Image (cartoon, rainbow over all chains, first blue to last red; front, side):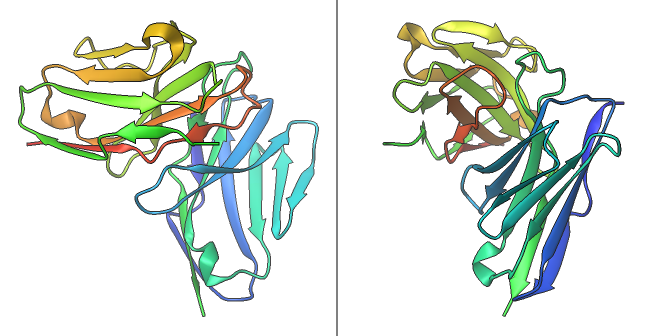
Length: 113
Length: 115
């Protein structure tokens, strides 16, 4: 079946370390992949978009990679801070047809000081 | 600019009752989406409006759900009659362009509890 998997439901790291979150998908050929952040009681907030012909995208302390051969995207937060604690969602367009995004379940990141 | 607003933030109703959720997208955003997150599951697509027209309603669970977007501005999602499995958080999102490389701007959701 077609699906998106995010590596784990929860990830706990120490402040200052790099957090790496994984998004794997099967049976899709997305043109884009997006990452969102969601805080408790709030809606998802867009962070980054990466296209299929881009290997890597950076924004401040965030870095996203996209490997269409492995069908995987990695999301990195360097020099993590307690304020980075949230749930991170990956989303993609499944059929490159302008259809709506589908989402993974998310990984909840906890950064302790 | 004002973000996407949803009303109410919470709703508790009994099985069999009717509930109407409202979404006000960002001004000028022609594309409006409804999503739902059931506890423990991923956020799932319900439907997509382009202006006042339903572009894709393939995610609507059944005919107890009715979405409208009269005049292409705000949208309502009515559940009638509500069932226990309809409980969850209903998110509305809007985007300026239709292509899926546009980021979605989400509201904070309506938490619906059906007892």
